Image 1 (cartoon, helix red, strand yellow):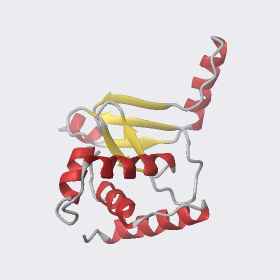
Image 2 (spheres, rainbow, N blue to C red):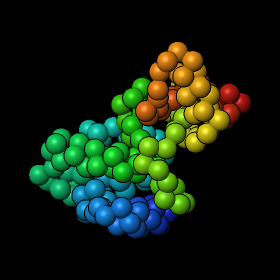
Image 3 (cartoon, one colour):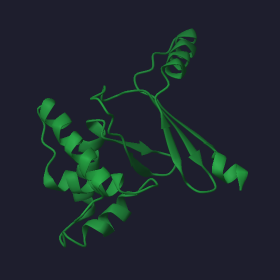
Image 4 (tube, one colour):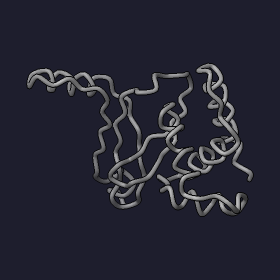
Amino acid sequence: MGFTPRTETLLDRASVMCESRGVKLTELRRQVLGLILDRDAPTGAYDLLDQLRSTRHGAAPPTVYRALEFLQEHGLVHKLERLSAFVGCIAEEDHDHDHAAQFFICRSCGKVIELEDHELAHALADAAKRVGFTVGKATIEAEGQCAACRAG
């Protein structure tokens, strides 16, 4: 399964990140991550399964879900609950597994933009504190229209 040069670079970076954490980016996990990174839009588990079956004929849903669980656990992908789909998250530098993430999802074209706005994360934590709640992990998903769709 061949990936774009950009994706191969990100996969190599993900492999190094995993090694530094004492875990392994197996060939299957690498393939699943590569399929996600090679896409311009979020990808669902069953789309990944269909793509995997072209090279791994015995691939089944548990195969994909275990790989996705590992990738999420190690901060290499995010699940967009609203879309029930996954996007890659390979930073230039190794970051916290549970970093604050906010997503803008275009209703028109499906484009997803990820932010890591610490001020927004702090505002959420402050608002939670005011009502006696402690935020453990939060992913914010906002729907709307991207600039390209608004202009068109």
